[in-house]
Structures are given as C-alpha cells and as structure tokens.
Image (cartoon, rainbow, N blue to C red; front, side, top):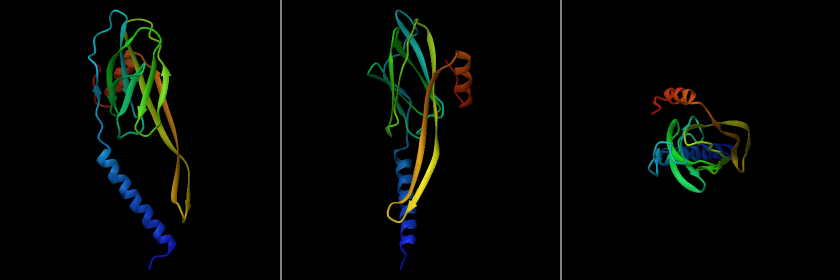
Length: 163
C-alpha cells in the first residue's frame, strides 16, 4: 500500500515520463522557407533570421512578416526571406504560446541580419500532495539586428555557413 506522498511522487515521475515521451515524438522541427527568395532589389530586402538558442529549443518556430507566414526555423539554424522596404511587423509564433512581435523598419533593398535568442530560467517551485510538483519559469525572448560579420560568426558556431 502506497502512502499519499509515494503516490504523488509516482504520479510526478509518470507525468514526467509521459511529457518526455511526448516531447520526443513531437519534438521534430524543420527549417523551411515558404516563398522563393531573391537577392535584394526593387524595393525588397533580403533578411536573414538566425535562431540562436531560442526556446522552446526542440520545436520549430513560425516566422511571419506583415501577417504572411514566410518560414519555419529550427533551433540553431537560419533562413533568408524577402521583406519589402518600409515599416514591417514581424511575428514569431512558437508552439507553446511564447510569441513575440516587433517592428522591423527596412530602409534600403539590401541584406539585413536579425538574431532570435532567449533563455528560460527557473524562478521557483512548489510541491503539494494535491497538485504534485509545480515549476515556475521565466521566458526571456529577444530579437536584435547584427552585422554580416556577427551573423556569420553566430551561424558558424552551430556549424553553418552564411551564404
């Protein structure tokens, strides 16, 4: 006969195993550009989005510009997409609901480089016999521009090469 504490520990372990199993099954991610990409010209820039340790790490994120889905990006990978000159709204949709939106003003038809990065830190935890273990997390997601040289170094760090 198991005590309530043992039952809770078993439930937490089993829940964790199910979560890990689901993560492994659904954890596949791909990098895919959904529209043909051209070099910068005639009012259209070429923007590289570099995903460098952006959580959730094992899932792809969806990249939208001006409400149009442009690509999916795996962790530690990058895509080049075309974005028009002018003011643009970028939306990064993650499968877990931790999305970000930011403005990306494009001044000229040239190449731009944007790094998507972040981290997750544990801010606390709670255990009780009714709910089991609850872990509280803080998500920090960032997007910032970099130079072509910086972009190349970041991509090289995860085994890629800037085209």
